[in-house]
Length: 148
Length: 450
Image 1 (cartoon, rainbow over the protein chains, first blue to last red):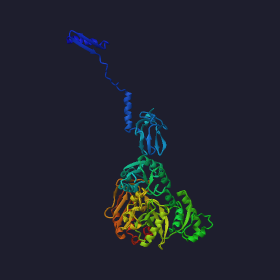
Image 2: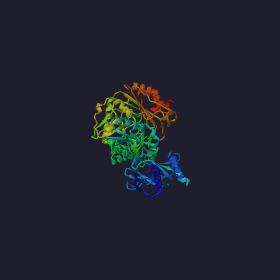
Image 3: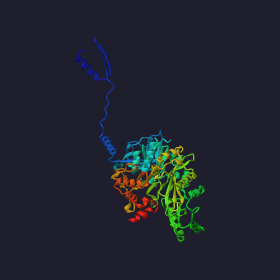
Image 4: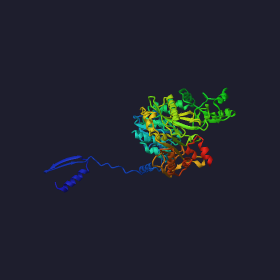
């Protein structure tokens, strides 16, 4: 088979739905298989998603971030128990009075309730971390709520 | 021995405790209010925890916060320093129930000595001389009130049983003023201490305030150290202390020392404490009260005996035995301590908080400075005004006075006002040089001259 013929042949094959072909002719063996793997390309980010990411960074950079601070010394917990999901995670919207964690000290539990409305842009402490009075627990983008 | 001590205090005494703990190989945890983040004790300690906002009630007096801090830091002992919670029996109890050692005496000792009437009764039983006075509280309804006052002999003083710091006291010179004085003292006691019980004592004229440091171990052994003379006071607050007292001789020292030991033994005292006496011009001494904590003026005793009282206190709290006797203690010279407060003596001692733009501590032979301030440090307005203690030691009293004069000239504190100029005046005062020092020294010999 000459190269020109082979090229035409492969071009024709490509446009069919033949997955696999094996050909033996005049001393030439050709084995052809269509590849199943196609590269994954991410869809280009939408305008809204870009804006949201920039706003979050700006908030974290302190331009609009409001810290929620620890009201006491103790151990901070994100969730009611290891089997429960956290009260809040990054990206959640909170309202004043909402329980967002609790602190344990001397076998006494004190709830940590939000004192602002907004979106949690950063969870600043780990579950089970020792915290001091005034330590930053969360960063909240408080204007996010206000703008709505 | 303890692994980690949390210091429930601030400033210079917190630094002092950290130094002692460090020399004993013990880790330290400093606690602080928000404004105290830059305080020296926070920088010195191995760890630090912010325990509350600035007001003392919400931070250094906040028992749950302090205990939480001990829990999360894993401290096995708490040193309360002086002031704040040092003589708070409830705090001592809470520490005990949380399995944390309170570095101080038992809560029973604190309780017994904390109530002045109970303390008096205990001392009478122990054979320690007390100021002649009423067996219990007095009120204007007592039928034998005037008879009792006459027996004690005027002038008398009405004092609050829960009192301290000069509050709840009234001196009565004549019978006519007695009932009114009792009512006034009761009112002040009610508002200052929440307890209006008052008692009556003979008012000692021209008294010398002389106190003895005592140490006790858990096996019941008590040792006393050479006395401190704290007669120079302003509004019942000590300004300057020295050791030994220019007023005592060896025989009176021994008598009073033994009385101090009996007083401590009467309450099964462990760790360190101080028994305070008043001595009148006839050299009669009377038990006044016992301070169940380490005191501000402890360096004076450390300098003349070479004993590290904070290390001893920690060792005794950990259950170690006293390794020496009173008779083994030598007096190595004479020491004077000047308390440098952030106050303006020329404006009636108005507090002077603010930023210290330059701080230079004196140095050289025989000079010790206990302080938490440094150049650039800002003194907060929320706590007491003591910023430094300057202590001088020399072979004789005259040399110590010269040394302190020299040190006070070197001491530089710029940006705020301090009581250093007043101390410089006292050091050049003739009456002071002669050792003519009673509790009326300042108004009589210093302020009167202005």
